[in-house]
Length: 438
Image (cartoon, rainbow, N blue to C red; front, side):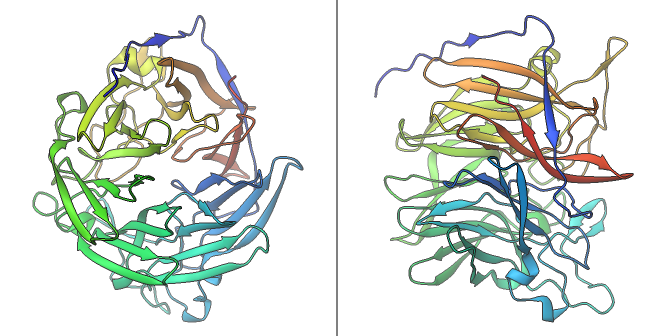
């Protein structure tokens, strides 16, 4: 194996810098927090979902055209799934990126309306009056040329899809259900869905202290071999091959690293030893991931079954403070850029007032912000091992984007995300455009 120089190059902030972002209103006044569901497509447009946490209306899909600076509404998720007539808890959101293959975008749906029990979001066991229980998530496709949606498959047991990835070459979709954490394999070409069963005790349906486990939000496919990989809260890494249809644990590597911190996997409120986000690097034939709470970038060589820490890629203020950021699960805005060399990462940074860091809650029992913080854009150039914090991001009126857990990078380097802001006295989440940092 070739030796790799992991020496780190810094481009420090000579003075506090800021990036000024523009937020958009897509027309959905009930838009709630969205995770992952944002991607740039080959047509140069930005596709995204806005979530609903209401039992009366589903999540909404939109497309933004950078050339015309216009947004178009593409559909209601419940309508797209053909379930409007059911009058059931709707398809409230998508929790996954869009994956493009042969001119179509592939994605899946998730429940957005929960019951809050003991401070935890749970799959409703009792539907609101006049409504049926959630029917389960769907695998869907969207044709970029014709604008047609196709309902591919229904997720079994009334669960949603909390994570998904795609083997674009072979046409396989893989994902993990919520809340029980079943591993799902869907063969697009042959229209065959397989449920391989639970991968992490009872997942997020379990009882804290015993069989509860936070579920992995990001999977990746080895594009050369076709194997898919995911992590579990206890720190183990699993792989699945569509030909053998066998799930196995890697025996020579795990994520229980001292630098990631110490966790009780049976307790809610963090991703524990799960990686937060990970992607396959086609040139290097390895995966790069980030551990959510510690913010460490790592390199995973699945053939050698080896993990090497690269660097902590939190914001400069976070690095100096030595503290975890405020979002309890860490951040999903982590992606390889269009040059296939630069990682883009949207993460938190502490706020200081009168020289003191604003402190949030010590512990919460779900994925949410423990306190207020700034949003920073970090880039990491892999060939030169160059880290750069491009500064905190603010709207034109000086307010902060919050609850940021998505990212897309346009061909020109413009960064897109979905974030909260106030509109007409109401906090919503919608599309945000951040100028290229280069």
